[in-house]
Length: 165
Image (cartoon, rainbow, N blue to C red):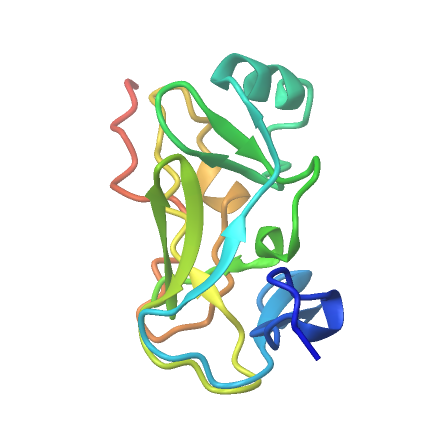
């Protein structure tokens, strides 16, 4: 019997991951089987929009609501995984992550930084930047719950800007 060049759903490769409840936050993504170091695990997908559109979509949310599925691709494009996204949108932040993201030709990939064992939760550092107009409690808004030994206690990178008294 001749095989099709395009595998059916049942013939597709074994999935690396599964979404389930997380100890870090809400839902998380877990390895179903061992994932080798360097493997591309999943593409972060969703609706591709401009930065202005991404800002418009989230401008009326309370400042204390840090929950978004936005991922910046470049100076023009943001992926909103809240619209048409896949399981990659549930990968949680960690200060010592087992994954990293890479943008290649406008596509966002989640890649294993090290070998990941079955049952481990996948994570990457969100590297959320700070803005001069952030509210004073921004670190609490973006509180990190990864629980690693060297947790920086926030998903934000860099030191808070000095505020004028």
